Length: 373
Image (cartoon, rainbow, N blue to C red; front, side, top):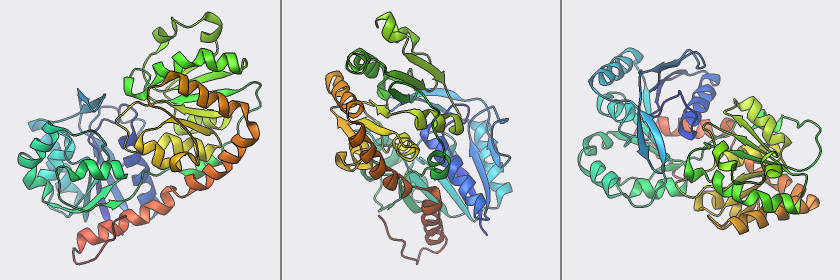
């Protein structure tokens, strides 16, 4: 059994891909018999496992086309140091170690071997590379084991850190999604999952394309899942089209799985800044076909279009064409779904967590050769 400290730079008060990754990995490691503690920014704890410690009030910071809620400063640094000292960890696993939040503070203060996971995919960032090359250099040099969640994240990491990471993708609790059955319904159903008021998630593009999709398949409805408010975006839609959109707000995984199981197609119209695509895998596991922007990360998950439909990034007409074609061809869509389920199953946390443990073992004993890839 190992004592493992996981550090997330972003607040658990809001949903996010890195936050979900950290919580899912922690739950899997606990299930394997390890003693796990998690540290992250945030104020609310009632919805979190008992092994999670939050550092208090957060600050919203624009980052990579989104808004990250982070936590830093002398008081937070003191809390981080106490958490590390009390934990007596065998491994400290820091996510996004270059993010100016509790991740950087933990990187500086850690005395146990450090493993870091890199999630971010972005175009060249002078600020990030300059900061990492100077301000963070000593901290980054402490990292004994490196993980990237995708080739895009690996390339971003490589711009400011000379290391070869293990490529371990984001995981999904496959059983939770694959075991959900959709309720009987009429007509076609689309789903969107993501922050509604975050432009890079692409909801305005889907809403702009939705009238054309409804003209092609008149009984189609759209379910929107995620934080934020997008109702103002529907004001330009015809009333009969706007009535076909159901805004559900943020949902827990059980209710999200239900939405995906009832969907014919998950639409992911994201425009940039994606290093992976967990929601694609969740939809694939739940039995929904996927239509997604042709971003490198999404193209990788969908096997270049073999396991889902890809449309041109930011192209409303191509989005409508792609989704409409999937809705028209029920037989082809079911074949696509069957192939996609097998791909999703390979991303089960039950398969990925042991690979993370291999990286931990290599960090504890640097003489071990932990294969990257």
